[in-house]
Length: 98
Image: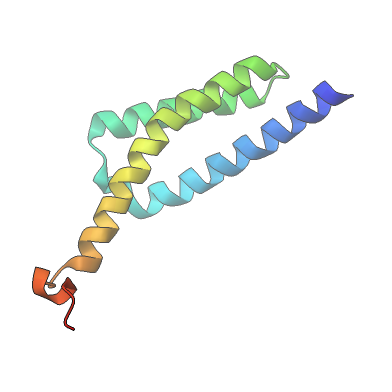
């Protein structure tokens, strides 16, 4: 059945997202404010609850809600890592020396 297959694929992908998020939180939770962390965790918990059901639309909605928070978290993490990589460099270091 096409619908059942789509449901299973959606659940597997959502579980992967949750696992990746868990690893990211272990590494960089401190880039989030308390409110951001709380919102992200609540969205993740809501998705986990939906994954226990077979309600495809509810699961997809929970994935989208988590994405709002996880995308913001990913941007903060990226900024941190870029800042770290560029620390100690000057603009002159990046200009063309030819």
